[in-house]
Length: 328
Image 1 (cartoon, helix red, strand yellow):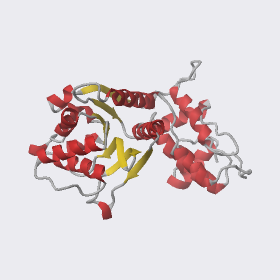
Image 2: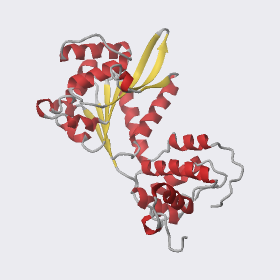
Image 3: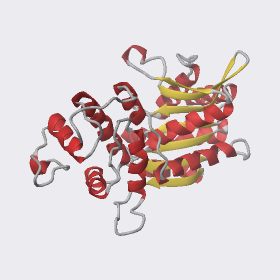
Image 4: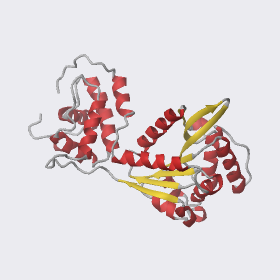
């Protein structure tokens, strides 16, 4: 690393966007994308819809893969992706929701809708969030769970929705007592009544939630469990997928000099830092990119990462995962 920054073709904002929005293909992302391709392609070919269950630790790449798949599908269909975030001013309007959107004349069509589960997700709360997301505001009043299921089915048919993605499905476990796990029944209703496909995505506890209701469990076509990437093994000809990921990631770092992320010493340090959780590495690279830009560094190497953690986290000496004896 040098202290002077040569002319760079990328602005600081461009560098941060390049990392933050980067989709890097690897085994985890490929499994998610493949599962979504399969279940979306099955829609309408059977009597009932089915569920694909995707479970993995936080930051393992689930949301990034969902984003990529939705953007790619929108491009294939000639549509767009849209995001509608709930905030305090709009808490009564809609859930945190994103769509694949197409237009058929004046009519909006949503082949895919994605709901982030928040709050107290009972059957009625989750169903109402889904309904508000579809209509982008307050739906017509409903009296009971049956009315809600009927209204939701009618809107899914009207918007020609094929796939509903629920993210953070493990949040259903927060409901205790008599209503524990009742929201799982909504997933069954979507498959059997609305006849759409469902992707249930979450962290640890997702499988347990889906297995808590026998009829819903029967609708699960695929159980996908995701794990962090294995540590690199430089004794082999190919040191492993983590190093391949680093080789792809370094190309997203828009600095004048190539960042040696995939070289043996630094690759091993990076794996020890994140335990193979790729989201942790992307977060580190995004924050380190900001520091490197401010400090005028020309790449992100071991020294840059050590100094970054010294500046931002006050980690010095052996407390710093990128420290080596002999460092000043």
